[in-house]
Image (cartoon, one colour):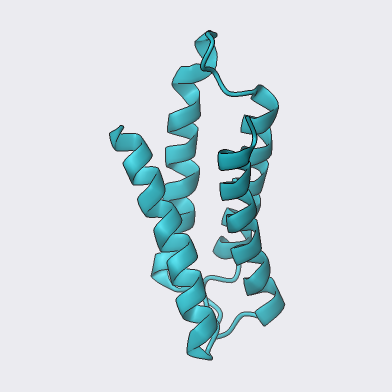
Length: 110
């Protein structure tokens, strides 16, 4: 339960920080976006790791793989330009879109 809470906090930092930056006018990678991407990736790995033992409630391995690929893509898109003064608006919209896609995969893929 605590790990899920941490994962949701990471999502809030990533999405909320991203939208706040997008609306601010000067688009850059804020600490909230960077830490949100790190928290999402690490806590997501932690959430998936104990589920590998089998059972009725284990998520589909394909779903976990898709979520991992998306999370790594988000992290790379955030980490590489983190020190730039400004980031391309399309790049930033891509980060926000992938964040929403990853959440949609988590919620709707059963």
